[in-house]
Amino acid sequence: MRTPILTVLVGLWLVGTASAQAPNTARSFREGANHHLGDDAFIAELGRPPTDGEEKLRIRTHFLAVEALLGSRPATRPELAENRAKLLAHFADYIAKGTTPKNAHLPWRTPVFIDDEGTICAVGYLIEQSAGRPVAEKIARGHRYAYLEEIVEAMPEVKQWVAQSGFTLEELASIQPGYEGPDIAHETGWTLAKVPDGAYANDHVTGTIRHHHMQGLWSVTAGDRVVGSGTFVNGKAMWHSLYADGKPMAEGHYRGDQPSGTWKFFHPSGQLAAEGTLSHGSRDGRWTFFYDNAKRTELAVGHFDHGWTLGTWKHFDAEGKLLAVSTATSADGRFLLDVVPGRDGVGHQIDQQGNTGDHHRLDMMTMGTERLFVQEGVDAIYDQRGNELVREGETWSSRDCSWTSERRRFAQRGELAALHTLMMDDRFAEHVRCAGAPSELSVERGKTIETMLASARAVRAQTPDFMRAVALGEATVADAEGPSEGDNVLGSRNVEDLAKVLASSMTWYIEWPHIDGRFVAVFATLAGVSPLNMISP
Image (cartoon, rainbow, N blue to C red; front, side, top):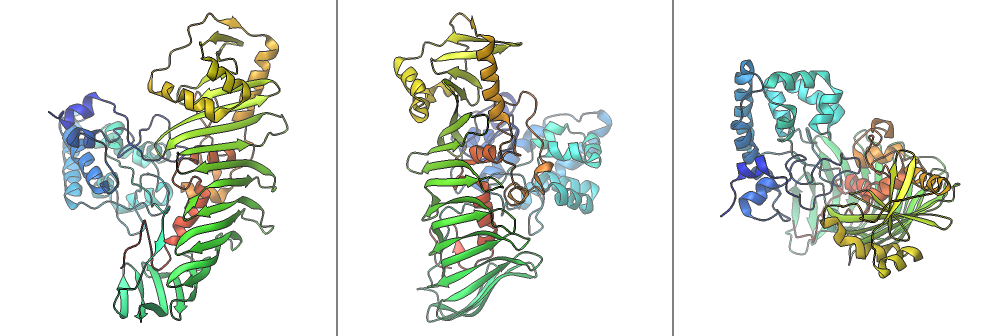
């Protein structure tokens, strides 16, 4: 017999299913439909995690469960009971409408307060109905992709609204969903073989089809603006995509009614952002991405294979110096980032295994003969002998962890991926400190360990501001908070550092936000491009 939804929401804290979050998301936030409750409601109702294609059911199931949960609780203060009841009634109306905003820009699951078409989220609807649409729109202008906790921290008027709502902040935050991002891994162009000739108008795309080919002027609109257009002759054209202010976003060739050939993308400043080739609507072949400057400093260089980034990619800092080399294989879900040693000589490699939302990470730092291994999640630090290293005050000590000879051999050789494979199962058990008797390390070795960890936490290369605008939905890097005290030993949530953004992004479907975020924006302006294997329109 299935467990009642309400019981699960009150009493359990289940693991969320695969659903990537932004790299600077608080570690305490869960993955899934909601950052507090994950997909608990769906699992309780259907006895399994949600699968692809069940997004609407996922959100509706979450809403109904939260409605029941909040309806069973009293107001925060007796005099606020009426306010709470009114907001619950508005929430029921919102659920009945069945409309939810669309995350059309960010390549991961995120809240969307009000989307491009004006559709408002559930919490936004409660604010709209009680405090007015202008307040909701003000929130959306400054905090479109923010969690409610972040909005309350930034806007006193929202904090006051929560205080008078009759709900706690956590209760209201438990409503707010995260909406899945656009999947462009296998974007492909359409086929017009079975489409009748004549005028075509569908989903903001207009044009004419003759002899099953695009002919004459075709355009894509967003509201009352043309965001993409091209004049076709038998399925061939030069296409131009535009930003909201009318400046060029991208330009490239259509052949055979599909984006194929050389393409160039532009920053809003007009500087070249990327160039490469599309084949039948998919990214294919070599692509180069650039910093937003007149020198066209390379940011990343690598190859796509039918939409996927595979093999070796090189990443550069703002001066054009090599920062890191990454490799990826889609077959076994393995990703390796090798950060070039800086002036301190500390090397840093990150191995990740698994897929989006269900991955495990092991870091290796090297300096001379010393190697450190840091296991994500538990933040346990090991040396190449298999000893756990623990700092107590100003003193470092080691404890024997009884590693197998095979683990120690891989650690001593620096074979990170092989060691990581043997340590994968450790993440499924609660971390227990190694049982060996502690042995105090020398002051000199302790200083070496501190130097290595400090090197990993340091900002090696500043994340360019445009990457946050494209990928994270923020205006500048300065808008992001640094890692909180005790966040983790490597400060991996610090989005100011490009290497950390790369490392925290590797297991998304196209790996890195400055690549996917740019394509998400451009693909939305193209005629005849849809996700997965394209069907006839």
